[in-house]
Amino acid sequence: MFSTENISIELGKFQLKDISVKIKKGSYCVLIGPPGSGKTTFLEIICGLKPEAKGKIYLNNEDITKLPPGKRQIGYMPQDYALFPHLKVKDNISFGLSVRNKSIEFINKRLKEVSSILEIKHLLERKPVNLSGGEKQRVALARAIIISPKLLLLDEPLCALDDNTREKLIIQIKNYQRKNKLTILHVCHYFDEMRKLSDYVFLFLNGKLVQNGKLIEIMKNPINKEVAGFLCKKGRNIK
Image (cartoon, rainbow, N blue to C red; front, side, top):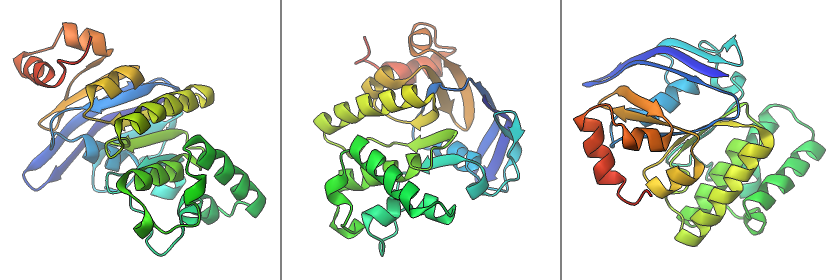
């Protein structure tokens, strides 16, 4: 299980306010809300990039609130990919295993597995400067999952992909998640993507978690007019 208690932070005029969640192991959870509502900030707090935040974070009954990012057993794919420009793709992907002092044999095995899943074997010898936006996105995703995290945080992981590639990766990610019983928190703005991936949805507005549950339940029973307005605007393509 993954959970947070009263996660809060002040960043200038923006405030993230008392975010508490409980998520069963193996759940695929999608975070939605307008830009600036706190979704990315919440992920950054969970993975340890904003240590000034208040509240508690638990993963599999362990309090990881004060642990450094590298000790949390969390995979994170940020919006900007954060690839190392001086390293080849294969070294970017395997970086997390290298700093954990895994053997070359183990690293090569995982590199082969992950690059096959995401269909990026042909990119392994390139550097990030020679990649398209969609290719960078898949490399960043590979780097997040190669460490076999207990929790995977994805910040708009499919937004730069063409429709065909996005559809293929939606299937691949969901299959990988189910096979490995992996808990995922995924920020997205595409409702079709959310519909196909999510077990549960968390809706953020103005730094608050205002509603959560199964997508169809939230669509049928929005908690207030603000939520209804957001869903009506963004979710007309949901059937």
